[in-house]
Picture 1 (cartoon, helix red, strand yellow):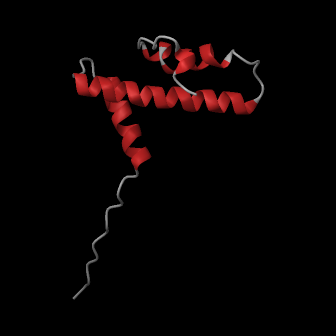
Picture 2 (spheres, one colour; picture 1 turned 90 degrees about the horizontal axis):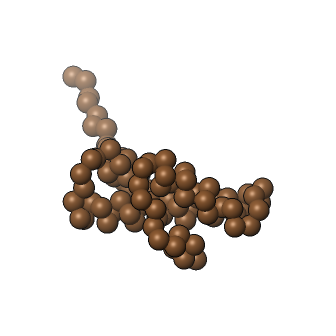
Amino acid sequence: MKRTYKIKKRKMTKKEREIKTYKRLLKKKKLTKKEDIQLKKLMKKKYCSCLRKVRVSGNIKKGIEYPICLSSIYTKRKKKPPKNPRKICK
């Protein structure tokens, strides 16, 4: 008689879960208040990480990183950018 082994399902990490929810929320046309808040938090997180990456690279002049990241995170996804984006990430 052959032995059968169960394969354990690997748990998703927090980052993997965030990516999955982010993609799901972007595809959705109408969001609830809770989903809207969740999407805003995830977009803010992406925006701040983009700023950090651009600043560390050193190829761009100081102050130009804001419109670059705003365009890549908010404008290309057809979402309204936050007011005064410079104060978001400090």
